[in-house]
Length: 363
Image 1 (tube, rainbow, N blue to C red):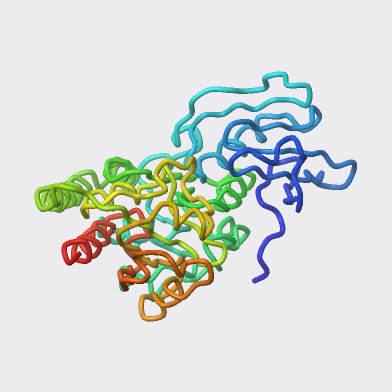
Image 2: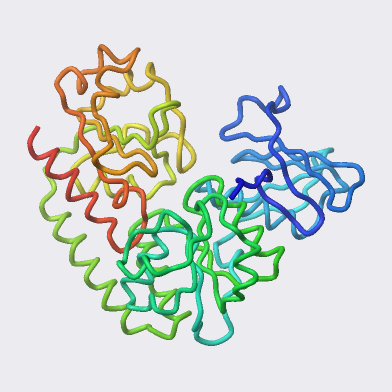
């Protein structure tokens, strides 16, 4: 299936990303510009979003666009809206929550669609996977996923097929940038969804309980949460006294790493480290070799999105141009970290902390 062209959509517009942003906005974090193409033809509009400010043409302003701006922000770890018209006039502003983006099922959901691997793992942990009609292509746990109809990649699933399946509830996600395409598309199609985007272990626990309520399985959700809390307590008790600097790499070219609003910071802390880029705004941030050299982490982990553990190559970072002086690379302190744990904020995420803890303990 061809990847959708739009970045997000509303009932009136589809938003297509522009290659350049206005010069006066170029220095803002995570800034993106969009052409808003009108459905059915007619003149297009413009929008420009960043973590700090979202600006749209006056003729584009509507409640759907406010929803889209919130979804765009949430996928980048932000929870404060500042939506303005072209003259700087405030259209909508303030703190929002994921509940503002969700429309839960009426009663206990008996049929489900999952649009993110961590969501599938939540349903597996709750023992409810027999309710799942379909999921995106990346899900590989629980084993029952093998029988599921596949909908395409998690950043571009077939939302028209989801609409045709007519589930009681779709578990969508805003855990990574780009997933706003799914959340806004489900809204346009009038589908009920529970939007998940945890930024901490506590968020995962809270979302497990929410999904348990959605499915009429609160006791099972409480049991899963209790087990995760016990695992977290064990990691906390075993942490070394002095944390070490950690670089966790989501992608090698360009280089991406977790930022301030990412759950990975807690996993790294539980392992006995601190994220050297935790001070950067956003959930996922682009970094340069020069910035990594300046951060000088004691240990590095490669955990590339969508890449199987066996295909992760620590040598790619060790021998990367511009990193010859990186102490961790020179000492061979670059390790594989299975993205199925580190990249999925769900019931199995604490395995990533245990893997990192073993490497840190050996320093």
